[in-house]
Amino acid sequence: MRVLKSVADAPLDLIEAAERLRRFKNQLVHGIEVPDAEFINAQTLELRSVVERTRQLIAPKSGPASKRTTKKSSHRRNEEGP
Image (cartoon, rainbow, N blue to C red; front, side, top):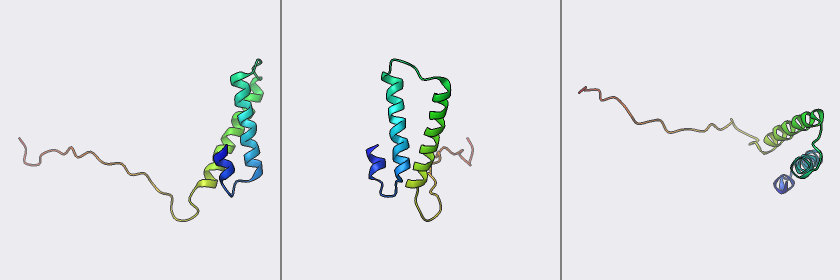
């Protein structure tokens, strides 16, 4: 939550949605009653939206998307044979 608030471009509605999700999480973990399935599904959709919007917010603004490179295995067959 603090990280999202520290992002200068974070819109207020995104911060408020993240705060609502935090309260929902606390209700699930510490609450006496379990919310109904419809409310849980709605919060799941909200979480997906917040995650996507946050990704867009922190993504690099210019240039192509960076790709992770992995080191290829150096196991090669001996070309001369056994």
